[in-house]
Amino acid sequence: MAMDRRPDDMVRITTPELADAFIAEQIEALRSQIGDKKVLLALSGGVDSSVVAAMLIKAVGDQLVCVHVNHGLLRKGEPEQVIEVFRNRMKANLIYVDATDRFLDKLAGVTDPETKRKIIGGEFIEVFAEEARKLNGIEFLAQGTIWPDILESEAGIKAHHNAGGLPEDMQFELVEPVKILFKDEVRVVGERLGLPAGMVYRQPFPGPGLGVRCPGAITRDRLEAVRESDAILREEFAKNGLEGKVWQYFTVVPDFKSTGVKDGKRTFDWPCIIRAINTTDVMEVTVEHLSDELIDHLVTRILSEVPGINRVLFDYTPKPPATVEYE
Ligand code: XMP
Image (cartoon, rainbow, N blue to C red):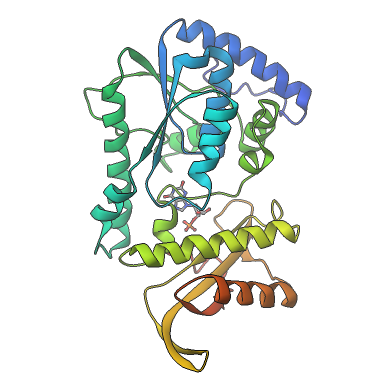
């Protein structure tokens, strides 16, 4: 039977054996809930939706239909990884929608942070609903709800339904196979389901993606500078043993230019800001201090490899007063 609430005496899932037992139980519960019907899942490539996808593939195979919407604001290599892991390796029924132009056209010229977030969230639901309408016989909607989401929604802190907000006429029964788990347990379960460690242990990434790291009106060239510098930062953190140790790290390319000089000629380009932080609850955040050597190396690589950047800055501000993201 699927459980609605985490039992008070539930043992924390910290070992492969405990994860395997949970997976076996859930697979049985999913099969009895779903029968021979179809299930739809918005697969972002984040930890929770990826684990839900892997669990459902094991339980009901191609009765699961995954939709991966690329809003054009994903990190370098992310859509490719979703396709490789789920379509090629796990043989999932995966619909890949490249909606980049649609999102970027809607966002063109929009500077207000909250309006940007609303456009991204609203457009996401529209694209997902359009795909859902093309499919026949879907009765279930799977979601990567986890236990803290439920606790926070009960405490009135935030609404928990990830794919909530679908149009009124689209009613599905929910399937939430990791809803009694804490995040660390979801990761252990994900590993046992065969997901790559890089996917299961990845750092948090906001729904509006790189959109909130390209402050002001998003342009394709500045977005590309964010994406490329972020890829360099992630590569260097991995090489230097910081991946999995530092809680979150990313780059931001703000919408202003400054004077520089390159090959004896004047340049007028953007700065790239590096932010690396540690926290336990994201309410309070401290800054990770990098070694001088790593700082020098990051500066050199970003300046030589990312078009449009002529300065690299480090954000050493804790939260409070600064939030983690810039918008
Ligand atoms: P802030 O900027 O509020 O960020 O200090 C705290 C944490 O939340 C992440 N974040 C989001 N995650 N959707 C998400 O799923 C969002 O819209 C969103 N905004 C911020 C942020 O990356 C940080 O880890």
